[in-house]
Image (cartoon, helix red, strand yellow):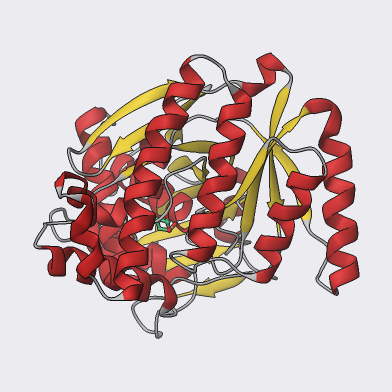
Length: 381
Ligand code: GLA
């Protein structure tokens, strides 16, 4: 980051921050419905360097996409990935003065893969800009930066997000998954170290890309909201308190969405119980059940994800599921260490036979939350 910044700007960055992507173990399409989820911070991050723009407007540059993008949000239409940076600056400036800034981005989280490269970018930008303005990074500030990152994505970029990705990017703890309850706003680290018992979490990146600015993610959220409204509850997870017959009166798609959210919340609780006693076979079964619900009830999977999950299960995984918003991106498989080469080979062969692009398979372990990597020198003034 220092070199990239120095090459482009002729001076080092004043601040560098890092934020991780995430992989969600279970609890998918529940955060927007007051539910539970269990993500972990990835050991892959995005780095953001910040310094003075030395001009009237902000500048943003990156190696995120092919080639280098240089962007000036003040004078050009803001689109693509740089809108996420511009969105954070917009959200921060609602309460705090920030002089024109140069933002340099080096991203190591695969983009559009369902691993939350967008939250890694918004959270790293928020942490860096906050540090540059002289702010410290305590727990309350981390919560405020989650809100800034969410606002940047949902309001400024127009890519709705439920808040799971930003919460784990700013609060994830190595060696643990983070149990998030979106009804109460609480979070709790849950130890998650499959490697100590001879298992590995493998990401199966289908390399089919998704974008949440297209409507499908929003459509599913709207379906969940509509089911909640019809049931007269503030969010779908609150329907757990209704008699089971209540769902019967819903139209088919809303009923299926309700079954997914309520079932998925129960699966998150069961997964936490399994993790407490290191019952990895139990976790695996819950992963596969979650995938079936996302595929059949909420209908957010796609043929590549279904093939990756089914093939991994057949090749020796304890269980597998799509992870993230869906419609492409990555699956996650829980695999005995000795079988991970078999799973990789089987998925690669199945993709070749189906005419899909070769998948990218790699192990993940729970990584560390966002942090300031290079502390601020002289402030923005
Ligand atoms: C995307 C959103 C998250 C969450 C997941 C689905 O990643 O950003 O908030 O809703 O989809 O679980």
